[in-house]
Length: 273
Image (tube, rainbow, N blue to C red):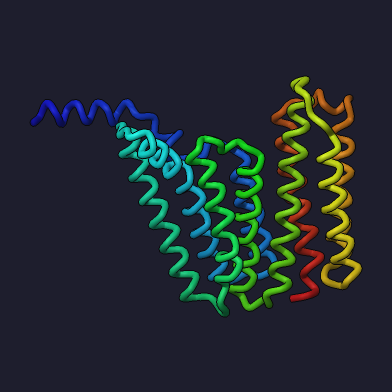
C-alpha cells in the first residue's frame, strides 16, 4: 500500500502544473480584461466586480477542462488528468460563487447577454475538444463570447438592454478585427502566404458600424475616433516596412490599442448613462 502511495506521489510530483492551471495563450488575458474594465468604467458596482470574478473563474476553467476532456476522449487517465479535474472544479467553484454573489447584489437582471454568449462559448469549447483551439473561428468565438461580459456588468447596474448590447457589439468587433489583423501580420512577417484584404475589409466594416452608431446618436465621437485609429493601425501595420517589428512589440502595441478602444467606447457611451 505504501508502495502504491509512493508511486502516486512520484507521478504527481512529475506533473507540470503551470500548463494545466493557466492558459497557454497570453492574449486571452487581454480579452478578459477589456470587457471587465469597460463594464466597470461605465457601470461601477459590486455586482460588476462579482461578475468579473465569475468570468475569471470561467476563463481559467477552460484550460484544465480542455485537457481533461481530451484525455476522456482518448480513453486515457494520466496523472495530469487528475490535476486537470481538480483545477477545473476549483475554478468552476470560483465562477459559481462569483455568479451567485453577482445575482444577489445586482440592481437588475443581467442574464440575457450571458445566455446569448453561452452557445458561442460552447462552440469554442467544441474546437478545444477537437484540438483546434488555434483555429480562426475558435478564437473569434472566444472573443465574441467574452465581450458579452461588458454588457452583463452594465445591465447588472441597471443599464437598459440596447446600450449594453451596443457595447458588446463594439467591443466584439474590435476584438475580431484585432485577431484577424494580428494573424495576417504574423503570417506575412514569417513570409507565409496571406492576403491583406480580409483585414482591410473587416476594419472597414467595423468603422462603418462605429460611424452608423455615432450618426444615429447611439454613441459619441470618441467611438468613431478609436475605430478610425484602429483602421489606420491596420493599414500601417501591414505595410511591408512594418513587418520587421518584433512579435513581442506587436503584442504590446495591441494591448495599447485595446486600452485605447476601451477608453473610446467608454467615453462615447458615458453620456447615455
